Image (cartoon, rainbow, N blue to C red):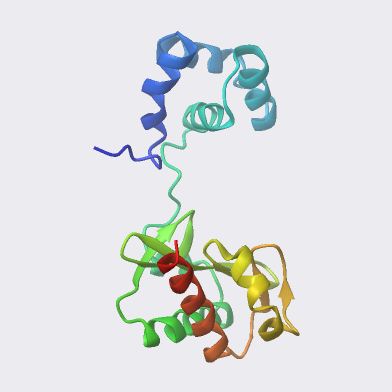
Amino acid sequence: MPVDKSDRTSHFPAIEKKYGQPMSYWFGQMEEIAERKYPEQIAFLRENHGFSQAHANALVMFSRGSTTTKKYSNFKEFFAQHDATKQNTAKAIFKAITDKYPAMEEVIAWNKPTLKLGDDYIFAVDILKNHILMLPHDGRQILIDMAPKLKGLEVKLKTIQVPVDWKVDTKLVQDLATARIKALKNK
């Protein structure tokens, strides 16, 4: 049965095994450094006990009261924190894709609204203060291949930045999703 990595306690058996102490010991260690800031707590575990970043983060965040990495369980929860303009733009991006690929499933992955086809992640969006990021999954090569179509947009290593009030280019967004699906078929 796969482990739910969004549940911070799922790391505990591996922490006990890898670092040789029961969780009660590690909780005691966290109590001793409870007044320290997050980066200092992470550094303490990494430098003094050889913790990996993932294990240190799971223990520190759990000790601070965060039992899960999930912030949102669905699109509605994610969008609720943003104003209408941002919501409408992001929803229009997803609609452009799902109109062409109605079998896409809406999921929250990495705390971002994401479209999935079968077991494969296809496309995500992140809404920031001054812009929206479009994230074709494994998009680096896709963005290189589609560079001529992306002129005029702010393209980073794996993301495309658009204004919060962007008039969605339906064909471009669909082409990005299509490129991801084709890349999966060619693997």
